[in-house]
Image 1 (spheres, rainbow, N blue to C red):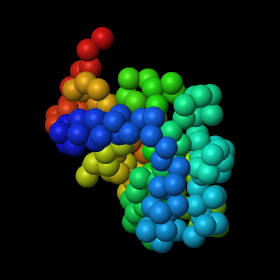
Image 2 (cartoon, helix red, strand yellow):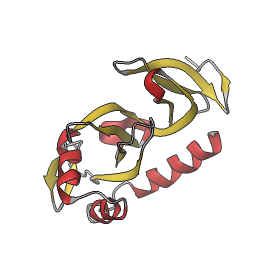
Image 3 (cartoon, rainbow, N blue to C red):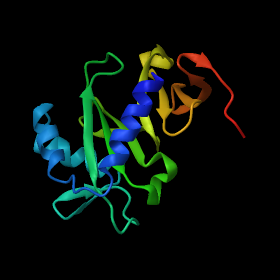
Image 4 (cartoon, rainbow, N blue to C red):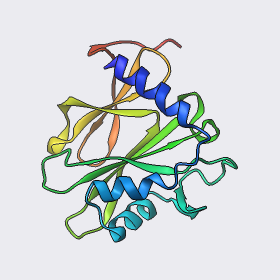
Length: 169
């Protein structure tokens, strides 16, 4: 897991500054998302259209744009969840990346379930209603783990390579 965080973090930080706006459409189409769903996802995340893509961190003058990282059913309800990623230290600090987890609702809309600075890693452990715990990776060796409590993802513990840890102060 830590290697996955470190490798993912390095890869994403390496992308900062590149124009990624054209990739979101290809990613969405490959995942079977309609244009309407894709627009609804980015709007639900608070993204705004800019230079042919979508930007969440609108204050960043060099925003790389948000992209769809993955689409899958995380909680087993038969509806897809989407992870959006966006790079940049302006809004996301040393992690260099931020994410939002959105879930399609039974009425057809999209809801933000979690968002944070860092790279999400969905763990085997679960919270309420079958939602997986999320380890939020970035620089360092002790990562926060978020757990769904039935209303929101909240801090649950710190973990490194599957073992509890205490982050340095």
